[in-house]
Length: 262
Image 1 (cartoon, rainbow, N blue to C red):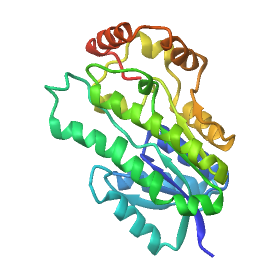
Image 2 (image 1 turned 180 degrees about the vertical axis):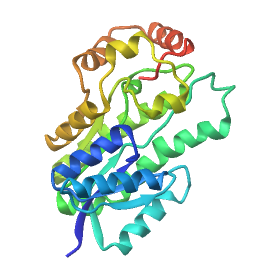
Image 3 (image 1 turned 30 degrees about the vertical axis):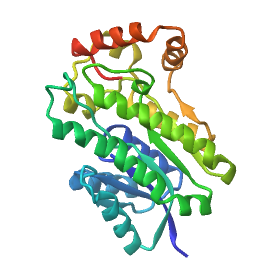
Image 4 (image 1 turned 90 degrees about the horizontal axis):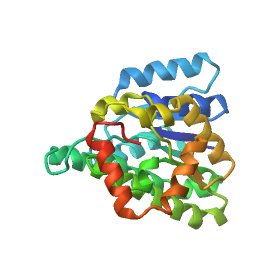
């Protein structure tokens, strides 16, 4: 009988690394996927030393169009079946969309949208068979437009919509599907994106570990959406009453000042 595994992308740092630790501590054998092999190996050793099952390490750049094929082929050789998928990998860039590098912005959609969609759907048969689940990491950004991070915000709106739809479609099959929507989190994401932490970051900030734990608990509870703090839960509620032009202007002002993505 094939071992069951939990596939986690973006597992080399930040929220993804903490998700890997949490799943492993709860008796999941994890598959660690990210670009940096040395970091994945170090995390795998840490998990084993803590008493977890030996992880499978797949060093793979999700910007590659064949990345999901590479992951699936590797898992096939390991004689394992996926029962949980955690799509955590993602990145963004700050700046006017017409000035930022076009190829880099397309790479955002490759990772945040294409790879996430592929991995969410590719393993559905085994997820359904084992009564597992899917956890997709979006952002509070998915609830509003984001001038000066236009592609990133749009990608997270897709993740939010797509995951909520999957939740509705698969819940009657015994599959848990949850979207995690954090605000600013102090991780390498901000450095790669080129953001500068501001007042909103200080007000809304939560640690990567706390966000990961909220996501894990929400998934296991079968929740549709996890907003991992009270302020995070207030923002989508308030946005219902604000005219779109006001939201658009406020978001543009914040992002244009170099404040962090949320």
